Each structure stands twice: as C-alpha cells, then as structure tokens.
Length: 157
Image (tube, rainbow, N blue to C red; front, side, top):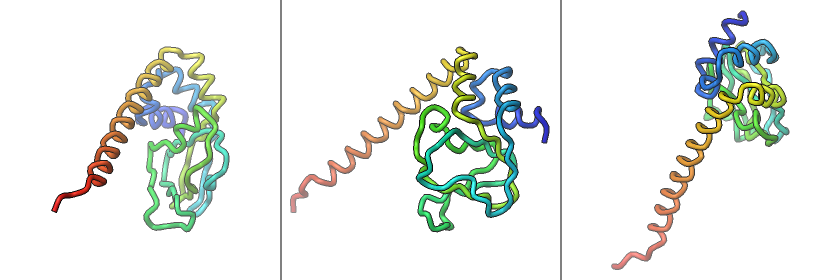
C-alpha cells in the first residue's frame, strides 16, 4: 500500500476529511504503518493513550469486556480508533485485537497537534465539528435524563 493509498483512506474518514490535502499527505507520510497478524493486540484496555490508529486494511475488534467477547465493536477501513487520544491523554477504554491480517496507520498525538498548528483552517474545521458533536451528545444526555426522571414519577393507580 503506497502513500497515495494511505492519503485516500485518511480522506475517507469523517474526522480526517476535514483536513486539507497537504496536511493529510504529512499525516500519511509521518505516521507509522503497522502490519498486524490475526490475533495481534494493538493495545490493551486501561493503557495510557499516545495517539490514534486508522485501519487501512483488515479489521480490528475493540473489546471493552476484557474477555474477547464476541460482541466487541469491529472497526474496518477507514475507521479511526482513539480519536480523542489524538488530542489529549486518556486511558484506552478497550483492548484492540486484529481479527484478520490488518494494516493500521499510527498517528501520534504530537504529530496530530503539529498538523493542527501548521494548518489552522483544518484545526478550525475540526474544532467546529467536535463542538457540534459535543452539543449533540449533551442534548442526547438531556433526553436520557428526562426519560429517567419520567420513570421516577409515581404512577397513580
């Protein structure tokens, strides 16, 4: 898989689609390509994050149970694992295991932050998107809260 293929995969991911082509080229060139065999562990739950991973080929299971549950979320190309880890240090909420031979592009936090600094228009588009998603999430939480409060109201017989 070549540099142009990796740029194309990045451009197909909703987060990276907001980033201008020159920035994508720098990410694809500077990121680390990792080749995984089926069953290889990319990272384990509760590890401190150091960046994100874009699935370029294959598939990666995210197991939050810690038991290799068959209900794990499956990430396929051009999925992004660890979006928030690109921006801030977090703990991994799941163990990531290659389900088949797979290739991922590791993007370190310092690299991603450098891209945002060097490409301020891309940074602003990403900030707006994250702000909208956060607003939607808060709205969704409000709906859940209302549903719980409605369940707490004593019902008359």
